[in-house]
Image 1 (cartoon, one colour):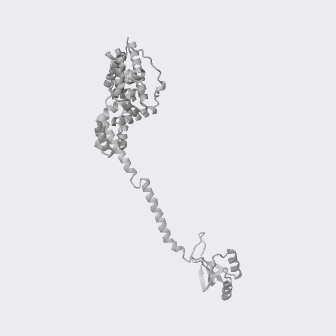
Image 2 (tube, rainbow over the protein chains, first blue to last red):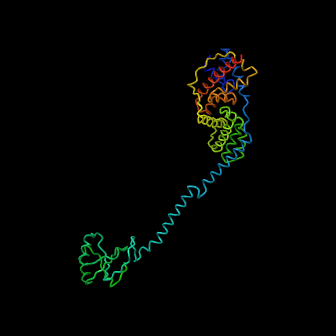
Image 3 (spheres, chains in turn orange, blue):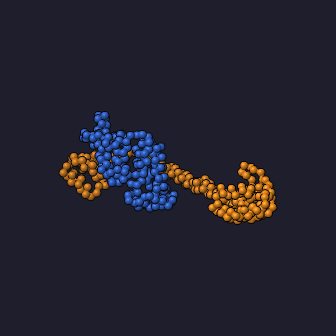
Length: 202
Length: 183
């Protein structure tokens, strides 16, 4: 028996073959009548498969179960989008916390610019007395040269730098002499100003 | 019927709960039979049936209309059934494993005309491997074309024809043995 034709027989029996294939099978049946017994077998097999009893399907009970599953699925989707229980909610909370931190920093920052500063290690405020001079240095002045100059005039930096680069130094000797000496070092000193006798809390 | 099913799927994709209920009633009996015959366990079959319709609810908008709705639906059910069988570690006979069974059954037809048709057929269908039984049921119970069956079981059309051929041979062989045992 031609295997190609034999493979088409079940679909000839259930009536789903395309026209050309159906014609091919019918020609084969004419050429080989023994195919008729095969077709009879397949037709009876098809009838028996159709009447095979299975257990009753769940029917309306199954529908109720499906509807319950759908409700549970909807509830699950709704809870996933509720702020506070979802990732979206946590993102909002973290953004709010960051903004609060920024606002807090802006509010507290001016207080850092007060004259009274406490060292992080918990240092004490000390009061310095003497002749106070405000001084600015040339931008490219080297630290080594600044250090040597200040040591020469026996001056100590007691405050600064400010935002404008002003340092306050205290001197104990002749103010005018020291001011003249500092001004002479134009390569290091940009400006010098005598602030008078002051007591600074440091 | 396909037009009605397509319309229902469109409504389901819009979240219409009445439409999914109507869709369920339209296909439930056929689908349950298709699933249960391979699982032989009504509780598991109920689970697969429920999961299949849930999948319809979730994926209704993915139906493109290139096949019939029944083809698409049975494809989902077939995949879920085979997946459950794999998880239960039931070996599915591949086509390569199926040795050619010589047709020695001139009495196969006579068995079918006896009064024990239902019992013979049921027994022999139960001996088929799931993949072959699925093809036979889709061919003879659902009267589907081999091109449709190929879509459902996700294999080439020639494989469908081969599986049906082998399933038929196995049925003949089994029916002959039943006849011999009864004689």
